[in-house]
Image (tube, helix red, strand yellow):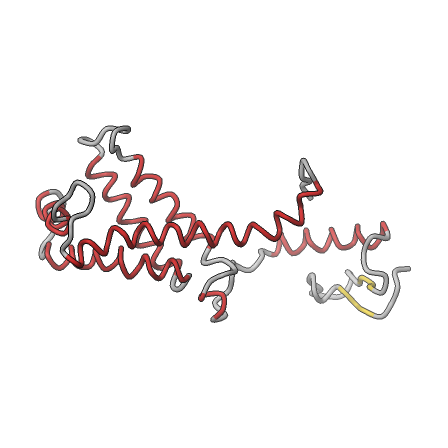
Length: 203
């Protein structure tokens, strides 16, 4: 297993990493929310006096999609309602997947006219990469998705389970594992959990 440069920090990392990820997800959702609300409320946003009109203009004249007003409304709802859902960690993967598509579309459309710096496309590109990370990572421990039993992450693959089993064997042989824990790796279909038989010492 990989080791840390400063092993003494391991407890801090284990404690803080889920909190840091929750802060990252919530901060991302807050940014999306601040972009969607002005569109829905008809208020100015930064240098744009009417962000909804700007969004509709992009959809109609650059994407050439039908019903640009409806699509513009859906985009505003994605940013506002979807941003709130990301803050709460609810429906995280679905919302993040839609945001990924939105940001990649913006980067593609504005790439030829927006410089990389000075209000450049690095902002939507970064947002797309972050949203894509949320798609694969999920909501995390501190989220409504996790509280509702949707799972913090994907199940470990058989290869990972096998690696974990080997790690437990090394711990038992070296004497660093639990005292009253025996391993039976010869049992058919024994996995990480099935391989452990409690109540017997290692012989």
